[in-house]
Image 1: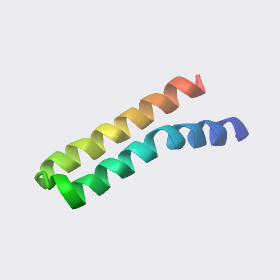
Image 2: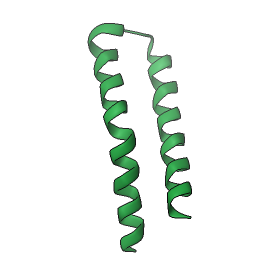
Image 3: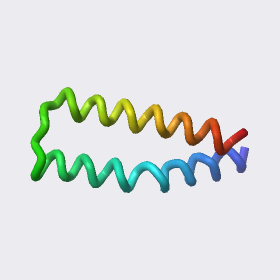
Image 4: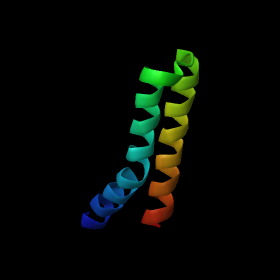
Length: 57
């Protein structure tokens, strides 16, 4: 169980900073349509799942 927590922390540390920066830029400067932001968030979720699967194996 501890290994799963460590893997989740590693994945979050790798994905969250980039995701937060993109969201902040979206809200302040870029102003793309909401559809583009949702596509990015879904992609980030899939990348997180993939990293988690790869790192936990």
